[in-house]
Length: 98
Image 1 (cartoon, one colour):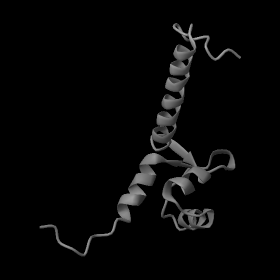
Image 2 (cartoon, helix red, strand yellow; image 1 turned 30 degrees about the horizontal axis):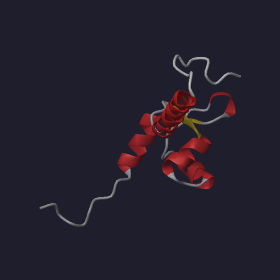
Image 3 (spheres, one colour; image 1 turned 45 degrees about the horizontal axis):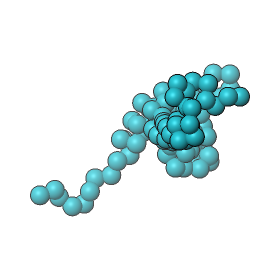
């Protein structure tokens, strides 16, 4: 595996380091941002997204509080449904905005 096959200017050590640094930075940026932009999620990902346990997720699904689809026996959740769930459970502040 050649890490530098797509690099047009990797003749010196400094150019190679800059090239690899750019790859690492792009991967770090995209991995954080892309998780919350996915169109659908698995059960494990929903637990991470909502910061809840698997049992809590099971309770939300069985109580019809959270919509999901189940093709081939595996639950999938749409991002829009997760956002709606979060919005519906928003608490009002006891302080007035002045």
